[in-house]
Image 1: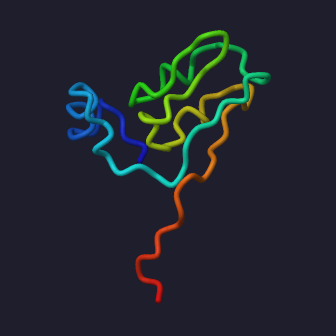
Image 2: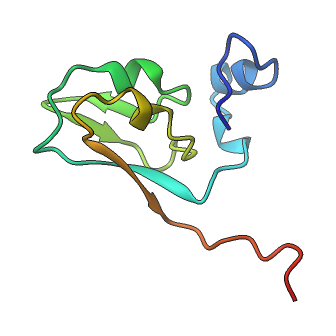
Length: 94
């Protein structure tokens, strides 16, 4: 999901109510490489679920990350990768 609060009518109320976890997560979760992170904060600003915070480097709250990948796309130093944490869907497979 690449939804953002400006164009998805369902997403903003869920995030505002602290219920972003009700959105269907992807199979992935953001992972930060602290050695590569320059602490710019672009990923924190882009994260729509509030799953990222900035200390010396960006950190991921696994309970809030829905695996959309928006943070990874704005990361200049490529310090964010997406790791698969859930199995692929077996819908339609026999």
